[in-house]
Image (tube, rainbow over the protein chains, first blue to last red):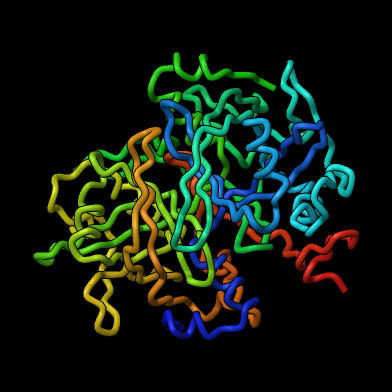
Length: 213
Length: 213
């Protein structure tokens, strides 16, 4: 095992440090957040920090650094109060990654990539067409994280759309059936496959697979 | 596409709701947090909310509901100020899942599973033996999330240990080389494989693979 201390990390050059520290906490969710500005300009940007917060109410959180890219996302969320979360699938990883380029404020990444907007019901914010899991979310609150000048945005899930092929009888969405990817660090796109699913863990009872006879 | 509204979600039964909402935000990191109480009792519990917060300083965050399982983890972190984060690999998924069982306060999941403690240097908190990426972290702060009575714990990475086979020249750790798993929902353990890695995205320049000639 290689050992790197906090001092070593602080003395690393920027790019290796970004690569190392972004990959050392494990796999991350890969989602496209789509928004619309108050004057109707669409925007889409990749995020790897969207995390489940709670199920009742259904809440998620994600981390933003509002003074840097992607600034449009934050501005639009604050203007309209809403955004969509769209899972990244294997066939759109190059386009999804390109949304992290530093385009000028007001430029739509939908115009700069092969990603297409999709509109549903009477919702004014676009979804990403073809994504097998799509959430329509409402901004609820934010917590300023003073330790590194970031913001933890809290949002509620107002509408949930998903490909029926992913759904199990007990509500679980099996993401590998939709070719949903996960992120390894800043730029490594990985395709997971289900190994096993376990029943609720009970003390003194051995872990039991759902698929065990 | 199936459509479920916020009202539908709130009217679902508890288990299907937990399964659906825990799987709808995408893949999650799978980590074992190991701690030690002030009187020397070890503890280990699985977490799926550990998220990269920043690289300089190296910070991570995770979500806890301190009044429910795993209470030992939170108590021990507050008592000693330190904990370790250990990536879950394919060969320990059943044991890792079992750490979520509701054992009494003070019971060590190291005693109830095949997971083994590992001690390094002069660090008093255990690591999980065999994990290819292990972080020694210091509690820095916490933010109470009033929306659902959870706590967002912020911690710094003080020491980082990893299997050299995962390391690339540019600092990136390739997690699939260590058989690191990711979580789909509460209980679905998945093994990712790298599809592609992309260079830093620049506006008007097509996404380029690291492996592209």
